[in-house]
Length: 281
Image (cartoon, rainbow, N blue to C red):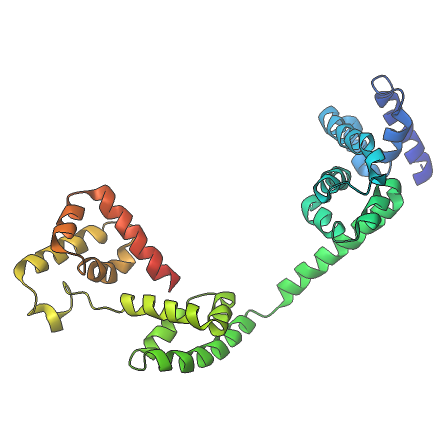
């Protein structure tokens, strides 16, 4: 059977299903659905739920079509109507395609409601654009991100050296754990960089409970608190930060540390806050 004959047959089947409920606009609804690929129409005819969804979307777009001539129509309203039409094509990218089409001037968007072929052409162009973007993303060498980080690392090292010459190497290494976009922002925003460096400096503070160079300066109570904190932290999801978080918490007043050890819920909140700071570095 030729394609034209097949579409005529599908059109007759659609019309016979739509007519009993929407006799006045059965022709328009059938015409809108016939813009879909034949395979999709065949599935709709076999699947009542799928057909019902398609008719509702077409009906929604058709019932609101008179508003397309109004200059006061909002972008949100246009977007909702356009989405309903785009979604009929079952591309799997309805939201993205709708957003791409809405980037046109409002008058151009309105033409899409009046010309189904123009709409289909625009959808196909958007699909090709999305496919091309995905292809480029897949073909981009993974090494390019490392190269970019290496360049950013050299630049940031020089800037961090002006802030903390003694720890600039360690701090730069910690900051390079961030993504490229964040590093680029730090490179352009001195205040943000100084804030990030400060957080890194806090994280680099030695753990009094574990650092033997300062162990002799600690009294027995602080040592005991440090051991209790460390033992608790390594039993949680934050075990990889146990050394650093222990050191950070031991900077708090002893009474507060004791209260935290006696209140697991409050202590867990503190652990989350400390880990969040370390993860941002």
